[in-house]
Structures are given as structure tokens and as C-alpha cells.
Amino acid sequence: MNVKALLVLLLLAPPALAQGFAGLGTDAEGFAIPERGRALDFPRDHGAHPDYRIEWWYLTATLQGADGRDYGAQWTLFRSAVAPGEADGWDSPQVWMGHAGLTTPEQHFSAERFARGGIGQAGVQVDPFTAWIDDWHMTSTARAGADAYSALHIAATGPNFSYDLNMRAEGPLVLHGDNGYSVKSAAGQASYYYSQPFYTVEGTLNLPDGPVAVTGQAWLDREWSSQPLASDQTGWDWFSIVLQDGHRLMGFQLRGDQTFTAGTWITPQGEATALPDGALSFTPQGTAQVAGRDVPVRWRIDWPEQGLALQTEPINPQAWMDLTVSYWEGPIRVTGSHDGRGYLEMTGY
Image (cartoon, rainbow, N blue to C red; front, top):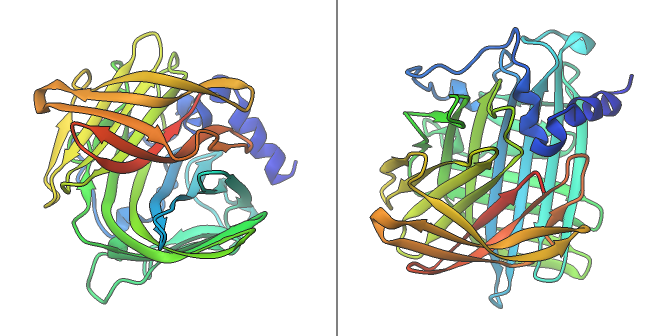
């Protein structure tokens, strides 16, 4: 069986079809399970965790051209283990998948790569840090002694698009949940989850009409687990938002028999406040016909305790990642009690 066929079977096994990539975590037998109280260890935890079932390195960037035109870029490397542990060559049980997206107000581009672990086609190296699949890469350009994620270069190429971006962090890493232990359901499924949400970006987007120089902001998410979602959860709505006053918000809801929410409020200095289930509410405000389905592309986010009432609007409502597992993902504008920009990812629609 070829690698792509194997990955398709893994991704489409019920209930993974609805949950997307995270649905791979529904069977955790033999794999390590996140434990509350385990301290994250850097730079080690920037690298791969082959004893866990699933993992990703996920970067989104909200960008603008010199004329003020809005763009968005996404770079993601997923690792999925067929069995726990690592081995050399073709004996490796690790399977890798890369996603890249680029959004303009009129167009959305996406691309996908697959690779087998153990043969050098894809992987993550801690020192010096680099994550890659084929010629796509996320590579540290940090100065000696600094955190590897304090400066990154990323690049990816797909049909009719490519991008080359440099970013530098202007704040610290942020741990979500209980010092990086992020609960995903009332039943207690959890992941290890942290972010670098403080990047400034500059680089070039290559589009069918030619290259565009851009600047902006970016957000890197790191997450790994073996059983992140409950069996009844059919998908999620995830937001990363940078407000004009320097605060940042990560928030998500997991849809199921009962909706589960969580989030993190981040000050401009990087101090994080975990928002428990029920603190945030996410209310659809408008849908669009996307890929033959109704997708809620406009949202209201409320945190009454903080006086936060945000309205989100997509840069391009048709930002559909038409890949092996399809989902909506794209840049958003934020208005209401605060103004800002961010990224929205929605799965299971």
C-alpha cells in the first residue's frame, strides 16, 4: 500500500471524516497520553514526540501589501503515528503531511504533501531547528542562545502560488490551559499546547499576477496528543486574534452533543490567562455557500467578564482547503469592542 493510500485510510476512518486530522486520536491504545503537571521542556518540545499519536507545527500569517491589500498565509506540518515510537528507514511508523494555503480577497490557493518518516523526506530536527516536507520548510534563524522559535524562515510552493516569509518574535512563548495541558472535552481528553503569537513578518508572496512584497503578523501553534477529542465531537471553530491594543486571544469551541469551549487571553507582555469552558461564547452571524455547503464564515465572540464583544469578517469567504481532509481556513478582520486581525479555522462542515 502506498503512503498516500495509507494516510487516506487513516484520515477517513470514522469518526475522523468529520473531525479532520484530530480524529486520528480516537484510538490511543499503546500511545502516550498527556498528563497534567508535566512541565514543557524547551527546546526539546519544539521537536517531534513519536510516542504520541498526532502532532502539528502550524503557522498562520495575516499580511498586507504596500497598497494596504490584505492577504493570508498558512504553513502546517502534521505528524501521525501508525504505531508509537520511531525506527530507521522504511520501518518508521511515522507518516507526515504538509498543508499550505494562501488567501487573497478574490482567490484562495491550497496545496498538500505526503511523506513517510525515516527516509529523510520529512521530519523535524531540534538543533538547529528545522521542520520540512520535501522542499517546504520552517527553519530557525534565531541568534545563538535564543529560543529557536524567536526567528523563523518559512517557504512553500503549490500550484499557481508560493511564499517566502521571515518572522521575528517580539514576545515570549505562551502556554495554553494549565501550563500547556489543554483540555478538549468535559470527559477530559487533552493535548499539550503552546504558541508563539508575537511574530512580525516580512516577505514575498508569488501569485499568478506576479510577486507581492508583504508585511504583517504571524502566530505559531504547537500541539501534540493521542486522544484530543471526545467521540461525539464532530469538529471545531478555532480563532487566533491580534488586537490593535496589543492583546491577543486564542479561543475555540468543539462541537458535539455539548459544546466545549476554551481560550487564552494574552497581554502585550505575554502574560496568559486561561479561559475555562463556558467563559467564551461563539455565535455564527452569517453563512456562505462554500464547496457546496453552508459554512458560518461570520462570527461573534463574547467574553462578558472582560467586556469583550468581537465581530469577525473573512477576508475571503471562499477560503476552503480542498485537500484530502477539507476544511475552511483564512484570515479575518475583527471589529466591535476591539479592532484587530486574525485567523479562523473550521473543521467538520
